[in-house]
Length: 474
Ligand code: IMP
Image (cartoon, rainbow, N blue to C red; front, side):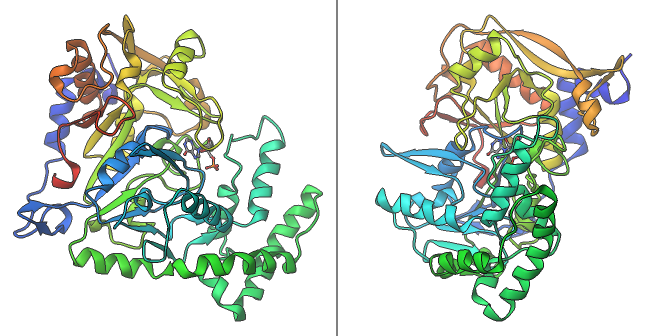
């Protein structure tokens, strides 16, 4: 007998039915789409939030780029230059970390919201790199929230020192200073973008910041940082960054009232969320969909459709629990075929089977309306495929990832084995082109996660996408 929660997992189709009974779609009010979105050309328009449903690297880049064609504005709302994706447009390859994907498409407004931690050096480098490729990022195209937190060199240094200190405390971060910058934000001692233009208060802010950091540095036995060097660092970057500064909450509010379509571009994945992820092996921001509102200065009603991206299998980089990890020839095969190496750090990613428990949990914590399933083709040719449908913990069967670090490390996956397919799915652009077993696999994922698949991606090419439901018209 399963404990109460487990029964819903085993139920398969029953779970899906129950899901829709429990969470009925509310009818839009007259003249409005979901969440009060305006109509355009008779189509119901929703703003769309794209989030990762696993540990990041789900292939958000291609999906965001595909959706950004239909959007007026693309907004980053959390994280920083720890994210990374590669866009291939008309044969040219663009590598983005901090800038929203809209920057490579003419006529789109790109916005970096207050929820992002902004490394001005990384920003300038990325803008210059794009410029060398023929893409000019002007203040017409890019706006940055005046209340965004700045990442300084001392944050990067601290991140690296901590990560190098010892295997027991290592998180496996990108060493970009993300965590230390967020610490200063909630510690109320951060330097924010607007401070670069306010010379009267900047000195005091630097003093407050350094009283914390220099105490820490003395404890670590490393050289203290002088106020002069921080001031110099900021005054060097200020002329390049300040022209992009804006009151983003107000800008987005205005655009929204004008009926513009907003695409919120999440970075990392729900399982790296600082509250809902595999804490402490997480990033330092909220990566769940609700952060799109907080991290851009809009109310929760501004979020329309939530699209959760997930791979047909699972990967993670860095340390931390990973119940379905295949530290064997299967994991290596998936990694090689899926080219699973970090875009930012080049680290090989850990690989494993699809974990329906985790993705179902992410669909709940993010309020996912539909999934975009990516990299199905990597599983082509497997005779059998395992799907994790539950966990065993201390002799009990459970259908969720427990919150405790120790319990997360102990859960053992319960697998359901399904038949694979020998035909190729790579490049398929319609359901009709998919082998029957591949369709069954997708349907099983829908049943187990209780969430419909809205998009299926069958190769890195943007055209190799099977669309079941357009998120902007949902
Ligand atoms: P941080 O965000 O650099 O502090 O790293 C914290 C954790 O998040 C580490 O496990 C990183 O590997 C992971 N992480 C951060 N950004 C990404 C990403 O874009 N994709 C996948 N993992 C990431």
